[in-house]
Length: 71
Image (cartoon, rainbow, N blue to C red; front, side, top):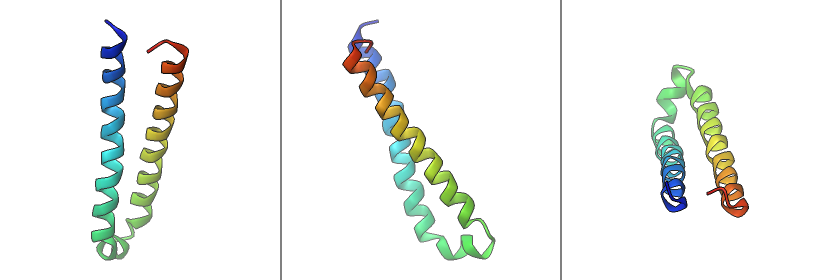
């Protein structure tokens, strides 16, 4: 498998994680009052932060691999 294909196989899921963070954040903002009433707002905030952390660490890993020539 060539490096271009490997890059795409790693970058596409990373983009999906960023899109998940964006859409989940929008959904939480829209439903903030209802989530607060049932005490689930904090869980969703933590979930968004964790998914964002995975996305950012994945981005750094991909950039490191590209610069080192592994991807």
